[in-house]
Image (cartoon, rainbow over all chains, first blue to last red; front, side, top):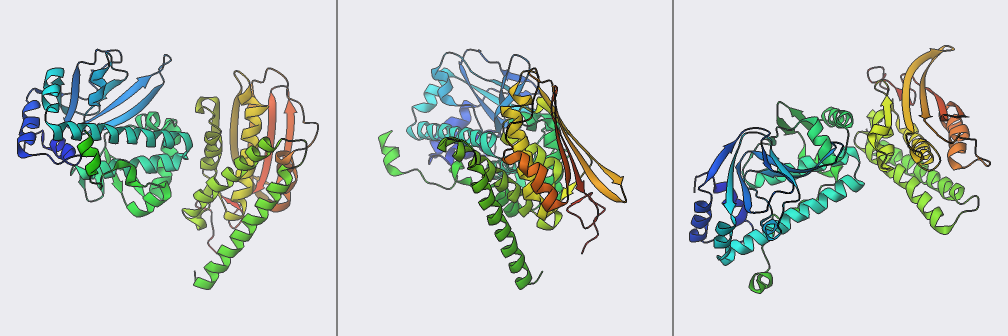
Length: 248
Length: 210
């Protein structure tokens, strides 16, 4: 499995054991992919929820805009991530979505998704994947609700590193992240000035450096402890309980 | 630092933290106040100490960045960043001064939220500071200036915890010289704090290591 779909399949295979046949079905489903250029809008709030977007390579984010232009970034999607498949059960999409850098995007129709979900392990993997994404959203709520600016940025960096490492997108303790300070601010409910200040402090303490679209973590353990990052909410190292599997 | 020395230092810090907590618990109970309000005030003050302690623990010898501490207190009160400005040169706060300063900024932020600039439409806050040479010494001059009050502010009828902290405790513990004034625009607090190498406030680069 060397195609562009491999990271998505790898990501889903962490949620449930997939047979070779199921992996092939997933790969076939991503046949109609396209290359998106940086900052292209993939979805606009209110669009009909009639397709599932999978990020095969690159970066994307989901966001909401307030009437006066303020923006909240709701989630980042990296290579191997997809939108919540359950969104297709509702008539409309309730967020907008944009790519951050040139990315390969696969768009699955409702029919394709229904065909995939006839495979019980694929269906289980997608359900568990969606729950894991929801757990990240909950953690973000805690982040912007109660953590200090320093903890918010440190926590986000630890989370991104852990997620990207799981799909093989980190090198040593660095990863690519084409984010501006304004985008970081809109993710963490901080002003760009405040973000800038906090990044300086993180660099001064030799914990993290942001430069040239690269994030370099100099001391992961110290950063993790300073930010209070506990990766258990990502559910990466758990096997699904048998009971939950047979119940579905 | 040897084990004994770092242990002694740790003990000293914990003792002074407990002393501060005792003072907070006692002073928060003064005046007519409901149990719920008492608990909420106490939790707010302890929260400010916890945040400051966390900042300090990253590298205790480096102290804490004044701008981060100020932003942190306003952020903890969920004040939108477009309603205030924090401007001043890089300034570090030494460990002896971190807790009292955190508490003072916390009291000012909460006061602004309940009685001041953030409790009124269009109210705004500027926190600015500079280092000045006066009377043969260098001082950190910090100005907390609220603006845009629609109902003129007035001095409180009785002096609460925050006011006493700023007018009495900081001068006593940090050698500060503070003034609190009420104008129709809003409250104005001027703090003069000793700032020089080896003092409790300093500019990075100025510090003479012991």
